[in-house]
Length: 209
Image 1: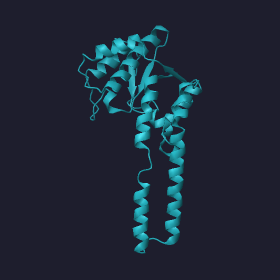
Image 2: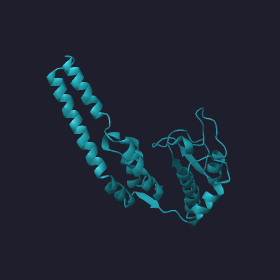
Image 3: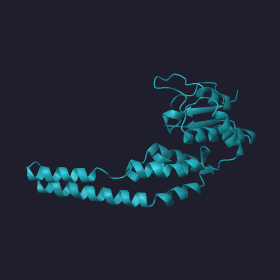
Image 4: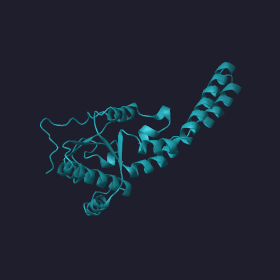
């Protein structure tokens, strides 16, 4: 959600395309509702135009030392002003954007239920060393995959760019017990939004252990 709902120039095209694929019925996209509420904080924290004042101070100094022309100074300031206006506009519309996603026909936004709370309690004993939000997301993914399987779904993937929830380390080796939890639930984890990496092995069916 952070990569999709960020201000336009920060937005990750692959995240946008993933939702477009779901809208086109190429796949079913499921999202724990807690991810929508949690996305607001990091977007507001990370995507402010903080460095514009630093650049303006540099321009004043550089112009006083004849390092930039008046034309370059004015052009740069126009770009900075445009950046600030765009970021303010996008962040001002953030709550509306997140609310629209909750109602998007291409996205199944599901609430936390009793089975997920039970899963969270179970995960607390597995020495995963996860932050509470990450533990909640993991519980939601594992429990939801089980629910969908009982409804007839047979193939599951989890797109996760956060290293804390990826079942491999920086060297690509399996991280336990996380990797075994995904295997037991029949969930393949991708580290991108294009469903390519890591490559799913030939013959992997997603059948739970």
